[in-house]
Image 1 (cartoon, rainbow, N blue to C red):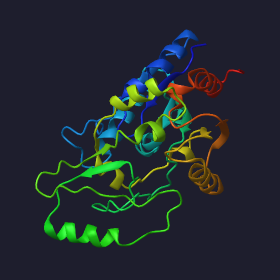
Image 2 (image 1 turned 30 degrees about the vertical axis):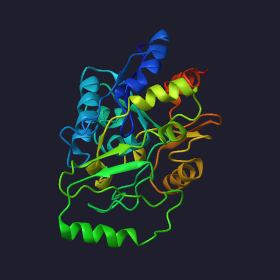
Image 3 (image 1 turned 45 degrees about the vertical axis):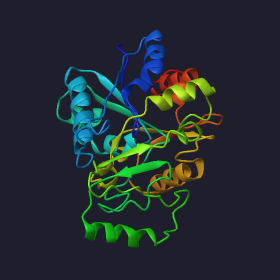
Image 4 (image 1 turned 180 degrees about the vertical axis):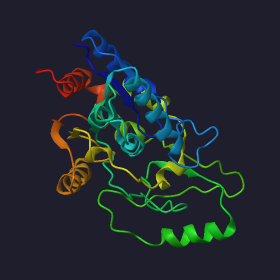
Length: 290
């Protein structure tokens, strides 16, 4: 019996190369993994919203399913938003009902957004809820600028989401966010060596800001068996916020969240820092007992 393939979606500002160590480890155990480059990462030109990311994920999963393969979609951080949106009609059960082979058999969210239908992180143009390590560079009119300044005076009660300190370039904005390299090691790579953290910080890319204003219309975790991975040392999403998202999703109906995995000593980017643990977790997601 052939083994499922993994489609691996990175988070914001990260290239698909963050999955290379994991891809090699999975290959050793007989699995094929497809690290996916998101169109919104790189921001040149910036995408308007997450539609192009959704399309890229859907196209690859559909291509593999149409070839008869079973697919496990792995999503990290922001990747859960377009990933959760992308799979309508692509689940193995749904395809079998139409007489088709292949399909997505499981979702794996790694400290990732587990969004219900209608979720929107912020209204378009609002940067007040962004993380403090994100630098915003967007083109705004004088009226938009006044609106944003007034919004910044409002301090919303958001669990573990500090108010964003915006850097606005009114005359030459590019519609992107970038990560403060001084903060990235502690936020994304706190469970790695200093040298590794500095290297991966150097690989961070601009991110189209419009993806954070996108609104979801579909929640794949309601219809496809789902694993959620909690990382105890994550300083980006943070464990309390991830647990809150998970609880909200599991209390809603329908849902197919049937497995929760915990990497207690893992930070935000366990596909880099905890390769063996993450490999074994994905082998379990594929049905192995390891």
